[in-house]
Image (cartoon, rainbow, N blue to C red; front, side, top):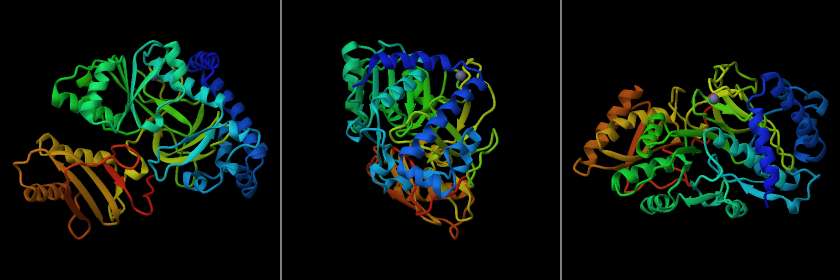
Length: 441
Ligand SMILES: [Zn+2]
């Protein structure tokens, strides 16, 4: 059960830290980092072995730069370990809370947190929302996967502050619109892809009035034109947030939207090249998380395959939490041409917009399962256009945009009645299923 007093204290302290000067924040990060490293070394078999294999002792990791000595750990490295090798011996395993990732980068993965850590996550999470204008008694509706429905909101519901009404993304769009409309949210929150579909549903049926004051989107990266569409339909600002289940929310847009403020007091975010070395400001790199609050099950130098760009600029909102930029899409949303050229999901969104605007294509999904071949699943909108002709134009258009000929890339178009959600309950339109994911750094 969450400790409301503790959460309130955490929130107040977290809101103060956004104004700390760089040096003060860094000192705070490094102090916490030393505790995290010592805890992992002394009480977590997986990390103890990893450190020993690489000749590292806790004394070697004192500053953020020292983290480079630790190899990057991926979810695949942890997936086959037993919980007892990943969980700290200091904690009573039976008292920990089991959480799972949504599995967007593969199979879902379970991990454990303590009650205090859960309260910390909630506080850091709420800090961004409060910074964007959310108030404790606002009606807060979240479109999310059922496994994210909080069991812990009961007490918040009772007290009536920051209490969420969750609506499953697997509910039919028309029902969703009805439920959201009934709940009359001040805050509309959820997977960006689902919010986009909700906006479309509202437009198509024209029957529901949904007027939140703020919208928060997460998980699915939708392109900026889709975000603008959501803002336009609901007539409210849309703020995007970044994160993953293991370390929770890690970066967020403030009302200035100059980038994403990183929750640097909760998680150290590094951007690294393929050798694990940090890239310079303004360059893109693979995002590596080192959690500063996960003691029960530490995440150190942990990669989930996201990519981003560290920025050196300050934000005009006066919050000093450092800024980053996101590269839209995860690694498994990047396709790769036979000549090695990478295509961001945005590329396909742009290509396909041509047909969407012409009202020919309703939805699509691009999947790459093999080198030199992509499959495009298409749900058409305008039935008066013959599939055969649309397929021909589509393939021609893609070849022209990407400048690839038949010999170098095979494009297979399949017309379907419905594009299903992917395994994670999300709505990714571009998926790379190559056995070896492209190295995009
Ligand atoms: Zn800002």
